[in-house]
Length: 171
Image (tube, rainbow, N blue to C red; front, side):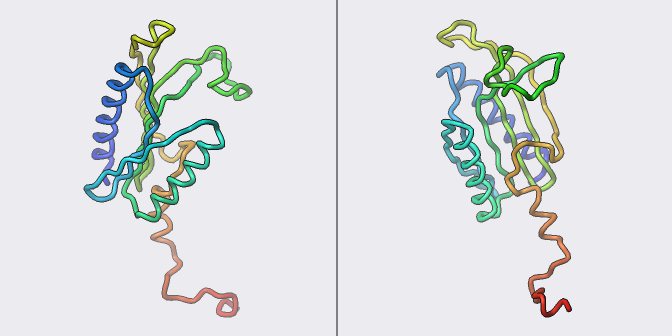
């Protein structure tokens, strides 16, 4: 999959997520597995950090088994803007936290992240006000790694499948 195609799909996903957030007040986390011309939707459910990590591991396995061209994930997230960078407090627990829609896409050449900031006008969350948006070409710096951007590196490795690399052959 080409970068421009991934960006286009991610833009559509973001627009749909914004509509759902405005209508329902929340976004259910979802992954999209791109295989050829097909896009498979995989619902996610993150109750805690451990569950999120387990589901990311499972998504990685599915992406590899299916030889996916790209994987995209969308969810609500927290971020913090501060003049004192610190990792002591998780963004979800930080007193200055803000909300955003987080869309990350990974393909063979790297990954792309879109962050759409928003605020809830009232405590019920009935009205959503969208703020700034950041497009980040993270070039492999992403916290998530679904194994797609590494596949090319492994596919082009010097190890060939028709050669026996057992210890006895290497002596």
